[in-house]
Amino acid sequence: MLLPRPLPTASGVLGLGADFGMFSPSPEPLAVDHRGNRLVSFTFGTEDVLPGGAPVPMALTALWRRNEVVVVYDRFRGQWELPGGLLEPGESPRRAAVRELAEESGQVPSGPLRFVGYAGFLLGPAQRPEYGALFTGHALPRRDFRADREIEAVRWWNLRAPLPGRTSGIDVHLARLTLPD
Picture 1 (cartoon, rainbow, N blue to C red):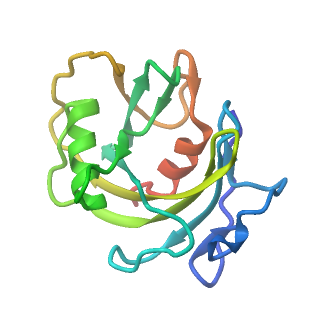
Picture 2 (picture 1 turned 180 degrees about the vertical axis):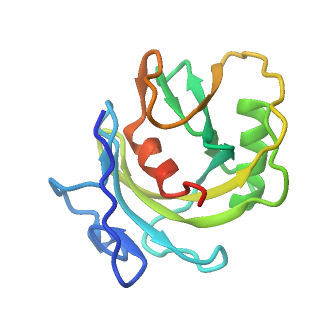
Picture 3 (picture 1 turned 90 degrees about the horizontal axis):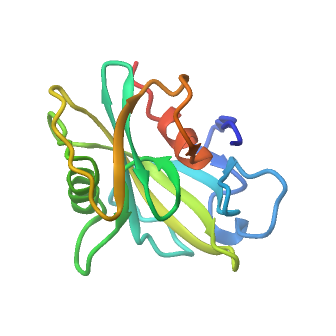
């Protein structure tokens, strides 16, 4: 697992550039997963200002309870990751984040999710450029979880203790960007 390296800039952009002119191969992504997917940028900003140059087909949530974030074990990818997934037709990133959080982890936020920013990815063997919207929030009570064909397990994790199996270095990096004060 590649540990994340925060690279803050005055523009609010982490990574290789502020637009998708940055999607050229680089040896310095913010994080990489075991499949070669790369997190190449993160732009803090406002939800209504969409990034240009690539689609925003996914949303992720870092939901915190005390000093632990909820992570799910995805059977297909064989790794621990933040709850999230693809937007359904006509669905906003915020709505997808809430839906995927409930579907994958059984958890719900204690209030409205807070938008953090847009993560820039290069995905798959073709290194396809995409953005994902990152949200964060807090959960008060833990809720029960039932495994399904996609998600095998849910854990509350402090980002330090070892987890059984592989952990997405990309999602660890994104979770660290949302650490509660």
